[in-house]
Image (cartoon, one colour):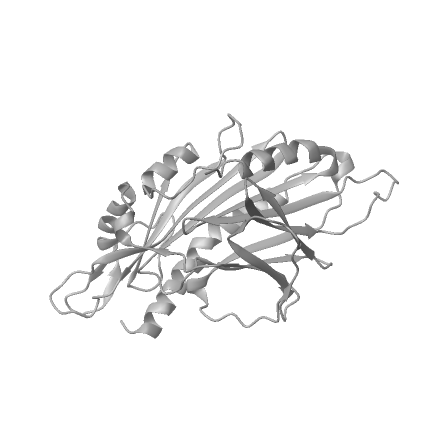
Length: 323
């Protein structure tokens, strides 16, 4: 498999990987609201992994708060693409790839499952899908995907077994609506005669979604290894809204000597219903931090009514990162 074929394979895997997550995000955003919170336009969010498109051609404009003192892990830029989608890009300050030897958890065994997903047809010599038809699958041989569900973030973190990874907390006992670890692997020896594919882990993520007192909260953690083609896991996030524009603004906040990047989405919309009832302003904020070559993102969806509760969850998450 040459480099171009490899990138096509990874892209196909990432597109498949994101379909279910996108559906869950859309369901969360379209969750029925109370009477004073209706009339919000449908919003679509898409996280794009770097493997799906290795070159980013965006006329980005930096929009940072200045004058803060703290460790900065990277910077955020915002822009709009040719289709009118609002785009946010987080660029870490370092190469985020880690040695495979530092991944010590059971996720290492995911490559055994990947080896059984594609088998070579002895007649045609072509690789054919032999894995489960449930869940995610790569459309092109050479990329394996494995996913495992968990009940807590701590269990998911332990399953990966990377010493530099932090388990974010938010002082809640509520169970996640979904929480899973997804791992992808790359096989470099598909065209070697007489050998079975040998996969190397290249991308690992933890994705979770909670509903806390009516607030939608997700925690996403990304880790890439030395086998990954790019020095960072996430390329960009796109946000679009039917019949309207999404405005992105950015700022930073320092907590425990760490400068967190924040992206605020202004979904717009009317301030009152057609009957004159007030509509609670809705916020969708993304908080980003990277440390020890791990990228963390928290996304929270709330209204002005729930702002104090949301701020407590945000503070608990940011205070998870300590020296």
